[in-house]
Length: 470
Image (cartoon, rainbow, N blue to C red; front, side):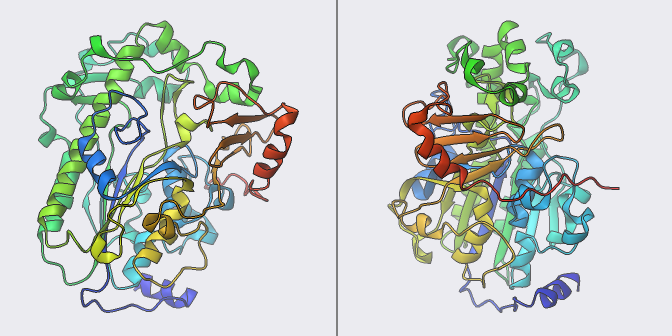
């Protein structure tokens, strides 16, 4: 009843019946999945065969960027179709339905429900897999309300010996890695994948929107031992790094970098951390593969659009060690959209180098499924790029990160340049075509004045204040 009232209120939707003509949607979110997947080449030792196989079948967006490099702001932006600078949701403790303007907001799965779909969600799709932050109002059913993997016994945790050196209590708690003796089938993430697989084995009378959220490679990296063994420590290659990297960036950038990366590098544990991240990526890939195999064997293989996305990047020591910054290591994330040929997809679509935003997922899926546009959301459909990755695309991706202690801060990523503007002063500009590691800040170089001016035109014209619930 609540959804019907919402639909009537906005006056733009009319439920449709299903005679098999509407595509289904399989919507797979992987937490903290950076570009360390084989198809993106972020690390040469990444082993993600299932994600790579999906990329070969679909359109791989090589320059997909989050709307915010932090879990809840990013996911809220995807599900609401609104920028963080519009809602004022910049942190993990804000919930959009606590905000008077958005209490009755129609989320992405709700929009599909209002148009004749059934929507099931499991695992971490919003900020949590259960409770308020999972938004129960968005789903017909939540089939999995847990996430992650079991923790090892207390005496086997934090054996890196660094916990007391982290001043940030959250990082001190999360930054850890260790093998566990449970099988992958015993983990909550696998059970979430199994729930999605079971759904795909059933007969459904309506088209479906099926969300599946995998928590790993979010820290801590507690994984079945086999995934560490897939990445032997003695063979690990470290990412590129420069000790003078921050000499030419403003104070706001150095503050975002914090000290976790230096603590891990100076503590001699960088290889272990890289191994843990690679292992976690391989684990997540196995969970994704379980769902994709179920889809391939199902009656829905040719009638289902598959979307795989990570909510933001994650820096494993290249500049810092965490998310929550505006460099490419923190903003770039995998995005793959597979549109079957039977639904008008291009089997030879390949990769797309155009910059796109995760904010665009809401309007894109509405477009690809032939639903009426929702005029209240932001972003733009990238359906033309799904069908033709080389199509003209004049738009950059805009990323926002505004911690409560300073802001607003934004990045603008065009096809060739990455521009960062800090709200309290300072800029960074990188020619990523020549400097992919973002080591040379060009912001003060007169030669790039026009480039910088052109990119700054895409900065949000206004920024909502930080929302704080009563």
